[in-house]
Length: 90
Image 1 (cartoon, rainbow, N blue to C red):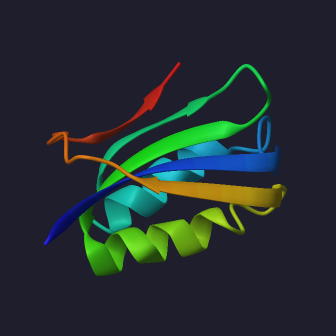
Image 2 (cartoon, rainbow, N blue to C red; image 1 turned 90 degrees about the vertical axis):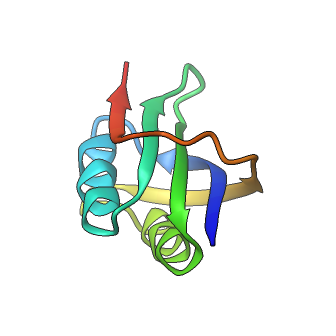
C-alpha cells in the first residue's frame, strides 16, 4: 500500500549534501516526493511509496549523509499526493 509522510529533519543538515543524498536514497527505494531546505535550517522531505521503503527512507533520514549531524526527525503521515518523481526543491 502506498504511504505518504512529511519528514522534518533538524540538526546540522544544510550545507552537507543532505538533499542530494536524500534524493539518491529515494531513487534507490523507488520513492516519489521532494526534499528542500527550510529557512530555520532544517530539511523538509515528503516521501511516498511502499510502506517498507518509506520506513527505510525515514531510517536513513535519522543519520543522513556523512557530514550531517541529525538531532531530531519529526514524521507526520499525509494524504497521498501522487508525485511522479522525487526532486530537490529550492
